Image (tube, rainbow, N blue to C red; front, side, top):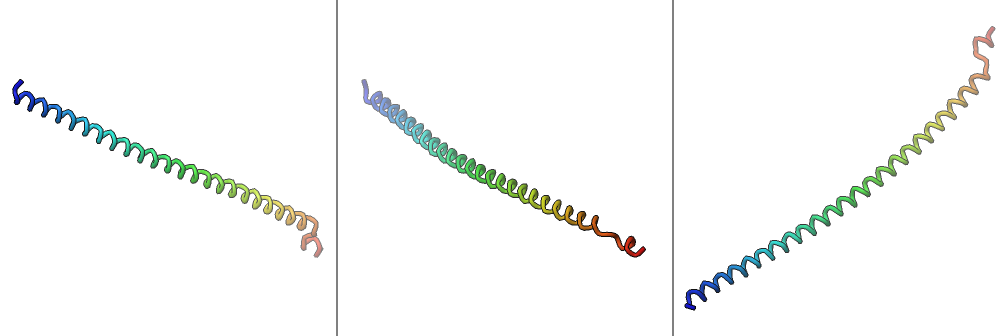
Length: 95
């Protein structure tokens, strides 16, 4: 074989090696990006879970306070009604 064919084979081999290096570099970059995206998504899901739990706690607290306030209001109304129903009105006592 002539030196031109050896030279051509060397160029082809060099090109193939560079192509493989380019693919390897690209795949490594994609793996890094994939890992970063996965970590970002996990962090977002954790943040969403914490926010949802905090919201549930707030709703539960709100519900409990509303129930307590409603109970206190009901007791106050009952006391008011009981006190006013046993007292004679002024028009009755003036007669």
